[in-house]
Length: 205
Image (cartoon, rainbow, N blue to C red; front, side, top):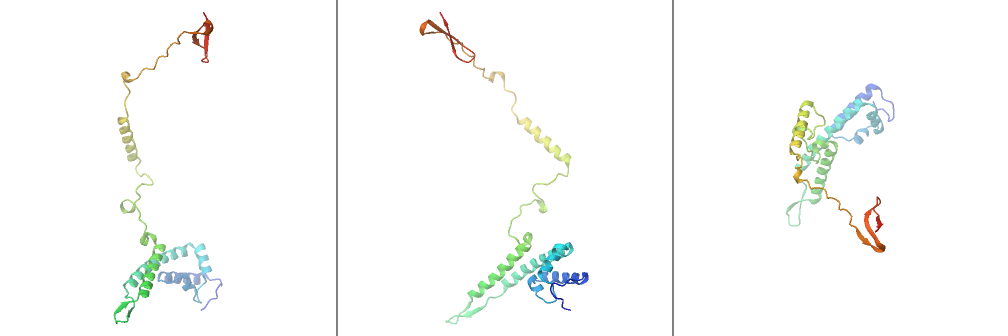
C-alpha cells in the first residue's frame, strides 16, 4: 500500500520501514535512492527518526558500516574488470584511456566513501598504540601500590645523583671591604670617611 509523503506513520509501519531502510542501505543503496520510492518516507522524515529514536539511529549506524564494507568490496570488483578496448588504424587492440580513467574514478570514489564511513578500518591515518590497541600512556592507574613504588624509586635515584655539601676549603671567602684612605683635599680638609648615604665627609685638620 502506497503511503503519501508527510503522512504520520504508525509504530508498526515505522518499524518495518526503518528495518527496510537499513537493509537496503547496507546493500549499497543510498538514502536518496531509497526515499525516491513512493512507498518510502522522505528524507526529512528519516532524519527526524534518527534524531528522535536512538534504536533506529543505532541500526542506521550499523547499516552505514555495512555500506562501507560493500563499497570496498565493490571497488575491488571494479578494479578487476577489464577496461574497454579499441583497434587503432593499424588494427592493434589497445585499451581505451577514457574507459581506464572512468574505471579508476569509480574505484577511487568507493575507496573514499568507505574511508569516510569507516575510517578506523579503511582510513589512511596511522594510529600509534600499545599492545592490542591499548594507549601508550595509560589514562588511569589500576595498581596504586605499584605506582607508589615507582615514584619512590625515582625519588631515591634522584637523591643519590644530587651533589653533596660543598667542602669549606672550596668556598671562596667573601671580600673584606677596605677602609677609606685619608687623602688631603683642597682648603686644608682631609678625606676621612663616608656618611650613611655614601657622601664624603671632610674634617678640618
